[in-house]
Image (cartoon, rainbow, N blue to C red; front, side, top):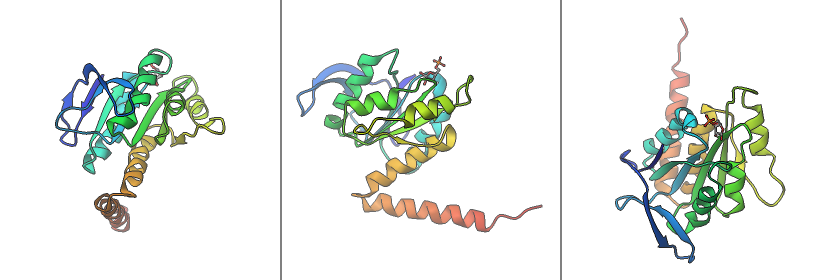
Length: 194
Ligand code: RP5
């Protein structure tokens, strides 16, 4: 699964042609003509997609243009490097990176860009995601990765945190976040038990 998505959930494969970014670096990731993604959601395997749909859906709900791709720190290291190196020049402002097991994707991306990287550890069969969590969170000083919770909660919160980062310069997004919190609070306050 590799798709570029817009706020209207249009799924298209990323155009595979080479262009020059403003930084002079080459990139194969060209935005869909009708969308200029602000957030990139990356995951190490298609097997992560069921969980990462939550990040995709949250960004869609807030109307944040974004794109979703599968790439791996281990299986496609050159692709991961290319994406991260060219992301800033393409207008991406935040990258969400999900991986499981020896979860190095977020760290490898962070090594190639100064954009904020939000890591989401995937639940693994062998160690229930503890391996993914430790691999994502234990970055050496100097190359930060903001690590979220394991699994779906982490995926949703990575999207909300990306929105909060974008909202620092976009008042309309800040208002949407406040409205989301109010609605969340209202639901809890109105909860009744049998
Ligand atoms: C990681 O290995 C992926 O992020 C995934 O969570 C895990 C297993 O991948 P598959 O073997 O299911 O492709 O790279």
